[in-house]
Amino acid sequence: MAEKKKIERYNIRISGLGGQGVVTTAHILGAAMDNAGKFASLVPFFGSEKRMAPVEAYVRASTQPIYEVGEVIYPDIIMIYHSQVVTHGKSYTMPFYTGLKPNSLIIINTDRDVLFPEDVEVLKNLNATVVQFDATALALKIAGTELATNMAMMGMVLGLTKLVNIDNIEAAVRERFLGNSFVASGGTAALDSAIEKKFKKKEDLLAKNMEVITATFAMADEVDMSTDETIIQFDV
Amino acid sequence: MSYLDDGRPQPVKKLVDMDYLLNEAPREKHFITGAQAMAEAVKRANVDMAIAYPITPQSEVMHLVGDVFAQGHIKEYYRAEEELGTMSAIAGASRAGVRLFTATSGPGLMRGLEAIVSWSGHRVPAVLGILTRVINAPLSIQPDNIEMAYMMHCGAVMLHAENQQDTFDFTLAAFAIAEKVDVYIPVAVATEGFFVTHAKGYVDMMSEDLGYLDFDSVASPVPAMDNETPPARIQRDAPVQKSNFMSYLIHSVWQQEIWDSNKRAMKYIYQYLGGPIEVQNPEADVFIVASGCAAAQAREAWRYAQEDGLSVGLIKVKAIRPFPADEIRDVVKNAKALIVPEHNIIGWLCKEIKATIPNGGIVVEGPRVYGGMTLPVELIMKEIHDALGLEYDLQL
Image 1 (cartoon, rainbow over the protein chains, first blue to last red):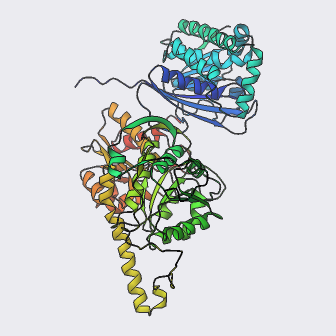
Image 2: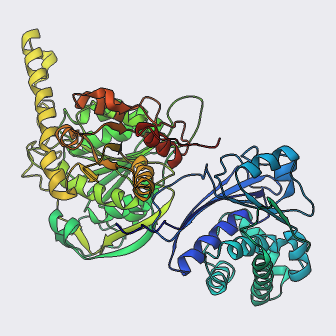
Image 3: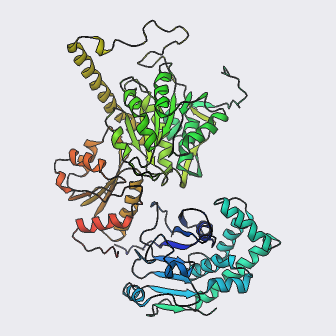
């Protein structure tokens, strides 16, 4: 019998704080997969909608149709949008790597190494790769606003996994900010108009977002995923 | 046709039989929620009357059916007093010989249950949507399908939808099944709240210009009542008015007839839905047996098992009542283990399966999640590996 090809499948858990665009990222990731002719499903999970409150969103991405529903309990990719998720336990999942599968990827937005030695030990045993970089600083440097942090995080995960190409992402980002087809919640709508005020034209916003994503794609290309190192630290 | 000109649109529809509507009419793909899928089915079912006063927690279904009414696809929408009032009004309205729809969830189902469990005995061929939610204290609004256990013993036909597509198809088929002369009892279509009702999935739907044939009250085994000239005695001779002996006799014969009617629904489940179960890999050693949303999780686990070359099959149970005992017994006759994932703590499906097969010891009790929790595919994979004597580390 011919060897069966494994289904390319990622279960992604995104943890962050309210206002960082966690749920928006999930929607854009889903749309980008759809644009690439692949499959995605997503589940947002948030309590009260307010800034700095814990938020989680879950994305399943695959080359095959997805049947499974509900929260991702056993992720193979974890994205942490705020260091306080790790250091202050601002998360629905404690510790943040609960349920992580072996050989997985963790991306943390932070300006310093936030992992405790005992965490590193667990992650080393799981053969995980942890990429730490200051996505917020990168967003400020390139787009001039920390509201593009989620774009940097999304660029990094897509750059590392090569799930979709840059055109698929651009179409999804365009759809999200120019399509007017989707409102996650009243809070998100208010945040959108705040972002829009920052950029006189939506096209500028789109261009800046894409610049951030392109920059993180370039950073991701430098990463050697076959390395034995558990922690990969970037200076932005 | 327009006996009620109340300013709503009056869509012109081509009325067709259920075989054509469900299995032949061309379809187009839509990306909609489970609640929308149920309302879209109602839109095409040529429903005479929808009745509801949904309490919290709910799905959007009866709200969306209200929109469908406003668009003119339903003749009448009655806002009842509350859930018991809704379910009683369904029984009353059915005496006029009309097609009826309502939907409820968790606590609302419990509140309406007294009336609902009398529908079968009263020969009410209504369709009831059950969008499952937690019913136990403490208060929660999460999906948990324990409420279906309370519905399983009232004589109603029960279908359990895996996803948005099933919700659409099952709801349409339910109207045809309920109204068959040799069935003529209610049909409940259940699916999980939130996981299916609030989530979007792909649904192939036929044009909304098509509708199911009019309700045929002349063909009904229970004569419609003319409420303009009501009969002097509304109730048929009730057993309680007779001698004890007659009371026992009438009631027992009636109950037998209800459950026989329930059994007779099976041939229509074959006709419209291709049978009460779906089987993948019938030669397998280990089967995952699941219904509703748990079947989606089971399907995913089955696919992972296929990739790993494990001898695992899938049985999706579409009909809970009538329960496909013969069908399941036949498929699992050589199986070594049956894994039954469920979204409730009591394991009502597990109990049914154990009672169905001669070697109930091969049934693995679970995995189960409750309180509305997600059912991780990994928990099913763990049971599969255990059943096959293999290691599986959940890495918790």
